[in-house]
Amino acid sequence: MRVLVVPFPWKAHVFNLVPLAWSLRTAGHEVRVACWPNLLDVVTSAGLTAVAVGPGETPEVRRQRDRRQTSERAAAAKRAPRQGLDPLFDIRPDRERLDWEQACRVFDDLVLPQARRSNDSMMDDLVAAARAWRPDLVLWGAKAFAGAVAAEAVGAAHARVLYSVDVYTRMRQDFLHARAQQPPERRTDAMRDWLSGWARRYGVAFCEDLVNGQFTVAPLPEAFRPDPGPTVLPVQFVPYNGPAVVPGWLAGPPPAPRVLMTFGDSVDDRPTRLPLPVEGIQGILGAVAGLEMELVLAVPPEVRQELREVPANTRLVESVPLAEVLPTCSAVVHHGGTWSFGCALRHGVPQLLISRAFDAPLKFRCLRAAGAGLAMTPAQADGPAVRAALVRLLHDADLRANAVRLREQMLALPAPNDLARTLETLAAAHRPGPVPAPR
Image 1 (tube, rainbow, N blue to C red):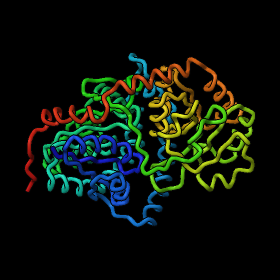
Image 2 (image 1 turned 90 degrees about the vertical axis):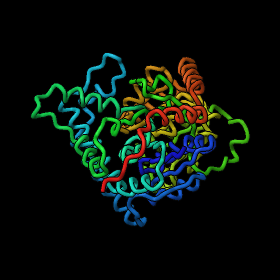
Image 3 (image 1 turned 135 degrees about the vertical axis):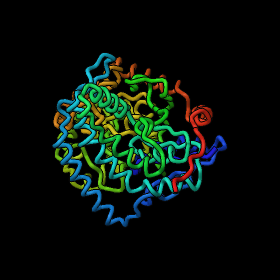
Image 4 (image 1 turned 60 degrees about the vertical axis):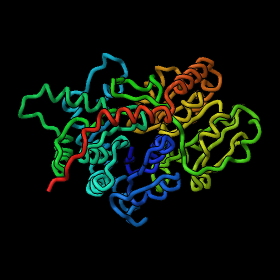
């Protein structure tokens, strides 16, 4: 069959889809990855076939867009503060739902602005590419709603592929539940209005599959799937970080328990967005200097230049291949990114999240319920707090045992190669057949 892969237009989201794309290739299927032009090299360097959709941008235009989007995200965060959204991050089965005002604020100020920026500009190109190639299955990364629209426009089956804990399904469920309680004149739905407009343009009707897919691929253990459902397909998280070289210092055993601290960000070719200022990192280094460990601190060159003192127990590096370094680690401190989080789970390493990401509270509650890690906000992450957390990560036998248990659960899930066979069956069952292009 033909499989069209549509990542959300960030580098890390392309990485998330590479293992599954390759599993389908090695199963004998034709695979193409439709992405923004600035990501073509990322796709082709992974050995996959790319097709350009969306805006062609020079590096300078992209930098200007990045600065503008950073400013817009900051403004959106002020309009839609996380306070009051606690039900969204509650993992209990009987949790309270977001109320109508909260649910509207989430979609209007957080979800839709980013969705429109990243999807509108590639929608026409993507549908045209799908009509020309006629895929049988479309795999679209979470938030890449254009993939769902293109699949419906050509009568292909389609699945949403998660990159983290699924906060988007529960946001939509809460919204629809709250909307049903409103009088008819207040039952607005900006998400439906947006997707309906695009669907009509290509001759198809809106359905909820455009929001969350006909089925969902979830690459995390059961403990990190707080909203299980019959259309969820679990799969192992298999790390891919792009081209990497194993550093020479990994050849021998570490001189002391190794701790990796990484605040890397492979979202795009923009400067790393550290959750902590350099002074905060310096304070942490001073606080942990006396601990018996080898701290591997991965930070960009500009941060290394600003650090005044580096303790003897610290190895400074610019970047590391996580899948190679983490198996040698006793603990990891990171910013809650997809790859750091997933790699730590896969290798059974207790972890400390220092994160301001939107989904961080849901990740932490799942992690805490599993007893396999700790978390704090950047404001809480001073030297003494991080030192205390590291001491616990290194010496708490229960944390380590639970992290190993999560690793075993993850490795018991279907590998991407196994999932490829399931996707063949589901694609045949969900594919309605060709949809004629509107005249």
